[in-house]
Image (cartoon, rainbow, N blue to C red; front, side, top):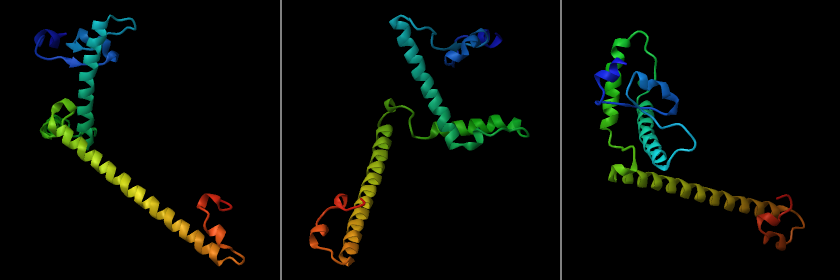
Length: 164
């Protein structure tokens, strides 16, 4: 195609295996199809797929940050390119990297998310412990109010009470 001849070595489109016919018109890089591929082709496919995942992650981040990018524009089509480029630039400017090879910022963000997760787990565990303690206390109080109750039943844990 005309774009392929005009920009033969300046850019390429990363595609997955579903875009096999596109290379006639555009310069495409896609994994090779087949089940019995030589190891070097399999390694090349893994590298292409890894880069493609990076692109997919970028578009996922772009769409999650800027809902306007996913909307359909019928009346302002001439503004859409400008809006998309602004959103893309702001996403590129954002400090969160897309891969862990992008350095210390990724490690800091991951550690922060792990700390938040641990805090949530701790709060949940404490809440459950408090609930169980109050439940045991309620059972003991109701058993003490029953006539003919002897102290041996009170010493049993919750799993040994009838009906539990």
